[in-house]
Length: 192
Image (tube, rainbow, N blue to C red; front, side):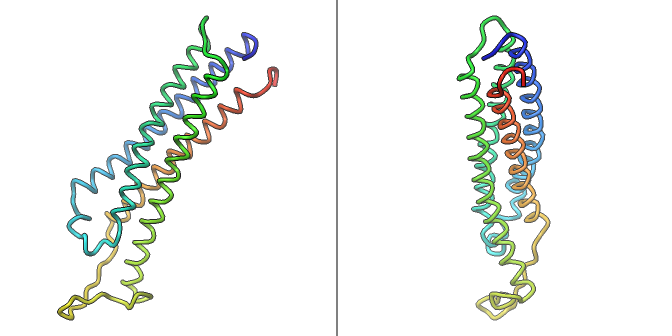
């Protein structure tokens, strides 16, 4: 990598930023987990399966993005451990350290992709539901086969689903930015 002083600076930076990355993702992950459990245990959306138009795929993609977030949190722990090892007598090479950080970048990109597609699914289904409420599109209020007019307002639980998706997206964005900064720090020439 570089001389001993630069190695110590890189070690300190990886440890510090690794901890920031880990704890910010853990906090946001706990929020996401709480909301997803609330959605599943409450069963409100499942009970309103005919009313909540298409929230299932969006919540499934949010759940997958959360699983990728768990892996990203694990990668953060490995980055902290790598930062500690860089300060020791036997330390990983520049290539090993870069590969570790690149894996965390990849994890965050996959999580962002899943979360973004899930967000589009959630927002699209809520748009259709809101449009039926207001009579803006899709023929106004829905009618049952018996001719009874039904109007299904958007509930706070459905909006909470969008919030959980936004939190998982934000966690992956934080991880991505910190990982990119760490890669830049590793590849920066000595003395810069």
